[in-house]
Amino acid sequence: MTLAERETQVVERVPKQLFAGGTWRDARSGAVFKVEDPSTGSVLCEVADAGTEDGFAALDAAVAAQPSWAKHAPRERGEILRRAYELLMQRQDDLALLMTLEMGKPFAEAKGEIAYAADFLRWFSEEAVRIEGGYSLSPNGQARFLIMRQPVGPSMLITPWNFPMAMGTRKIGPAIAAGCTMVLKPAQQTPLSALALADILREAGLPEGVLSVLPTSDAGGVTEPLLRDGRIRKVSFTGSTGVGRKLLEQSADQVLRTSMELGGNAPFLVFDDADLDAAVEGAMQAKMRNIGEACTAANRLYVQSGVATEFARKLSERMGALKLGRGTEDGVQVGPLIDAKAREKVQSLVDDAVGRGARVLVGGSAGDGDGYFYRPTVLADVPQSSELSTTEIFGPVAPIISFDTEDEALAAANDTEYGLVSYLYTRDLNRALRVSEALETGMVGLNQGIVSNPAAPFGGVKHSGLGREGGTVGIEEFLETKYIGVGGV
Image (cartoon, rainbow, N blue to C red; front, side, top):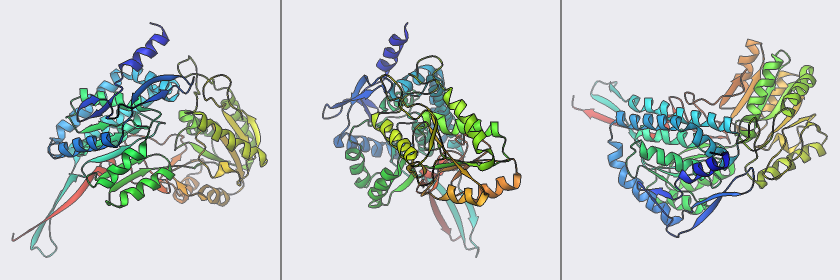
């Protein structure tokens, strides 16, 4: 079978309809929208385009299924997740190819995301049976306190296009483990991974109505009426801070539980006592994961003056050696950006920095041919006043800004409305702890360029979000605490 034939087969196997109430069906309006391959600009397929009526049908199914699903044995909820984990791993190659086709990341990286996504299912399959309560005597000895944990209830899950499988499992895993029903709205650019995941969960034994998936070209028209309806009790969103603010406003009417993983502007600090080769390697990981299209991407690289020139040289050599191309091709390390608008934004940010005095060490322009490619780029002497310093780049551009003192680096790193993650390279233990504590972010990568792990709490502070996903606290977002006071004992 040729690669082209395999690509066609992988796309054809994915259901293209809506998934609601345990069945696949067309949108009520009969509408569809196109899914594009960002490496070529060509259309991969069409999928059903959900509207408001479809949203309410999915919500009806979730509400109807909630009582019985909440009573489902925790062990069985965990077993469903475990079976889904195994199915994802068995189909890792096909799912990775599907992801490469719809969002562009190189196949090897897409395969890594499938394993990462599957790990959320495995992690929360183990957490399902560890939902604990409490029992205690009141201080005056006249009553007993019973503390129990119950599922929040029907939940709206909204996922982004940059990690289309992992962001789905990071929300679905704890919701299933906690006993919540769900309506999932995937990003318009990448519905196929979510639809494939829904089919795997159906195959793994998830009961009808527990999960619905609504691909749509009208996100607001589908989600806002559901959030204002009163029956959704929880919304979990990953995406931009701007959209997150709108969802928080819409959630306020019904006082919904919310968890928001929003934008980032991650500083990457390299001190002159750092292992420079390790710092360059960490910068490559933190900057180039997912083509730079990640909320955790290193957005501002602050390097102490004594090592700034050497760091820039080494990083430029590494970035310049990366192979740009379609993610299905052998050896490709950098795929296309998601669409033309994304590429235009990246170019505009680079042009602004250069116009303010930054120097292009490597890259600095769009790639050749079809698709939305942008060359891996390193900029030196980037002024703090540039738009790159305040805007989430979401592309393969590494702006280097030099600093002299620790206080100067911390002031610059914290000078942002965002607070998702920061990175720090130093061999001085005291400095490592001191700076880590002072950085205003929810996560810190200390001498490492990747912080994401299903077993660790993921989330930010300030305008980067509310709540945490993953780790032992991830399931807490889908649980309510009930206190029962027992008197007369």
